[in-house]
Structure formats: structure tokens, C-alpha cells
Length: 142
Image (spheres, rainbow, N blue to C red):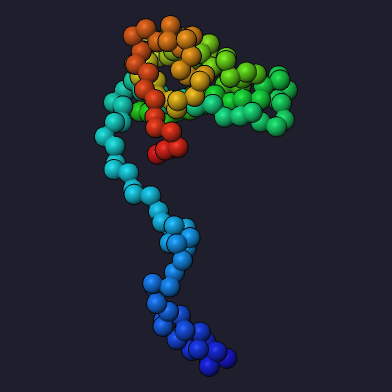
């Protein structure tokens, strides 16, 4: 058994890296790491992150198949809203901003989301008077 292991290890060591195929090299490639951001909000509701997940293959009891997640950057508090349609996102975000104001006495200053149509629609543009809407780069969840 030890002869077999030494034979295998000798063959692995003797391989030339120039013999690797192009596909192997691309498969082992990784992304460059992102720098640590200094964009943490100082106060609750200064910056919130939003995203929609779905459609889920089974509808909920109320008929919802999408989930709107809202995460506060400062506290990392999370809220989840069940949506029947993606178009309901702007209404729920408006309600969330009102809730932050009435319950916590805080104003939402920045909403950060992906470039999804539900966050870049005309309804959202009209709602965001005074609130900055930042969008992230596509396919970069970091």
C-alpha cells in the first residue's frame, strides 16, 4: 500500500504545470477580493438595503410568492414583507419609511438596492423625493 502512495505522490510532483489545459486554469480562477467599505451608517435608518426574492414555487397562505427584505445598515435589523407581485415593493417601502418616522422618529436617508425593475420604476422615482436611491453593480452581492 505504501508503494502505491509513493508512486502516486511521485507522479503528482513530477507533473509540469504547463500541461494544464485552459479550462482547468479558468476553473481555478477566483475573483479579486473587495476592499473593506467604510460606508457603515452611523444612525439607524440612515441607510437601508432592499432586495426582492422570488417567485417562490409555492404560494403562501395569503397568496404571496415574493419576499421583500429590508435591512438597516446600522443595526442590522431586518424586516421581511410578503408580496403577491413585485410591483407592490414601492408601496411597502413607502409604508416602511412612514413606520420608521412614526415609531422611531427617524428618517430614511438612503435606500440601496440592486438594479431590479421594481426599484427603478416610475413609482419609486416619485416616492423618493429627498431620499437618495443607490443601486449596486449587477452580480456583486458583496
